[in-house]
Amino acid sequence: MKYLILLLPFIMWAEVLKVGDKITPLSLHTQFEKEVTVSLDGVWIVSFDRDSSDRVNHYFTSHDKTDDIMIMIDASDIPSLIFSMFVEDDLRGYSHAILVNFDKNYMAKLPQKKEANTLLYLQKGVIEKIVYVQSERALSKVLKHSF
Image: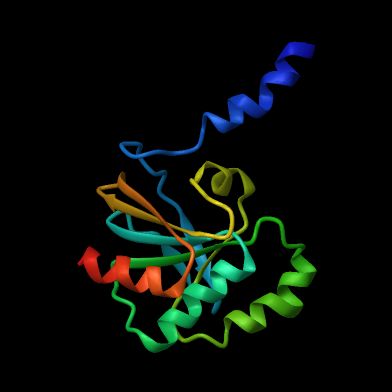
């Protein structure tokens, strides 16, 4: 039993999705409480922290977001009271849809790098490509070459 507990972090690490893996479909709510079934075709832009979320939201205040782009934030570590009092109001200041994911287990499966946005390129639910961006300029460059 002691060895199983020691191996648990490595077992969880092995569950992170990679190119060729299939994404589990899900429905999430936007910052406006609208339920959305997440598209399994197109690009998911995932933010795991405040800075990466701000980067994406700032970019899309001055650039059009097409329907094949899904913006998702990881809110799994934010206490619900803090989220409803502070974070949710900030998110409502943006006109583009932001999908809010509170599922810690689901978010743990998505690939991530510190201080970066993860872009998952999906086709029929299969991850075709994973890109990490750490600046708004890099995000702009990657999105312009994607479509």
